[in-house]
Image (tube, rainbow, N blue to C red; front, side, top):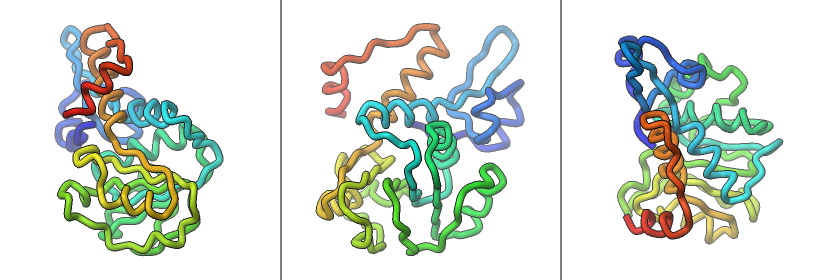
Length: 206
C-alpha cells in the first residue's frame, strides 16, 4: 500500500483506469509506448486480503476511521464486495465531507460517535508509534466483529490490542500491502508472482 499521488500528479497522466478515476487515487504508474496510465492497486489488495481471511463483507455495516490517503480505495473495494452501509469519521470533518464528492452513499459521523457495525477499520496514522492510542470508546461494539488496521508495522497496534481484548477478530494491513504489490508487479512486468505460505512468512518478518 502506498500513499496515492496528489491530484496535481494525476493531471499529468494520459489516462486513468476506471478504478483510479473513481477514487482519484493512483499508486502505480505504467508507461506503455508513449502513454502513461495511472492505476490503483490498493483496491484489489484490500479486497484479496479480506477474502484470504474468509471475512464475508456482503451486507455488512462498516465504520472507517480517517478520511485521507487510502480511504477512497477502501470504500470502493467495500462497495464492490456489496457491503450494506459505510460510515466514516475523521477528526477534521471537512475532509470527510470531501469524500461525499466521490461516494454519495457514505454516512458521515462526528468523531467519537461509534455506531453498531460489523467491521471497524483504522485508516488513520495513529498507531505508527507503539505508544499511539486512538482516544475512542469501542466498548459498545459487541464481540466477534473485525478490527482491521491499515498499519502493519508495528504488527499489533493498540487499536488491534483493544479489539482483541474486547473479544473481536483482528487483522493488520500486511496482506493488503503484499497483494497490492503483486498487482503492481503484474502491471509492470505482465507476470503475477506466486505467493505461498513460505513467502508470506518471510515477508511477515519485515
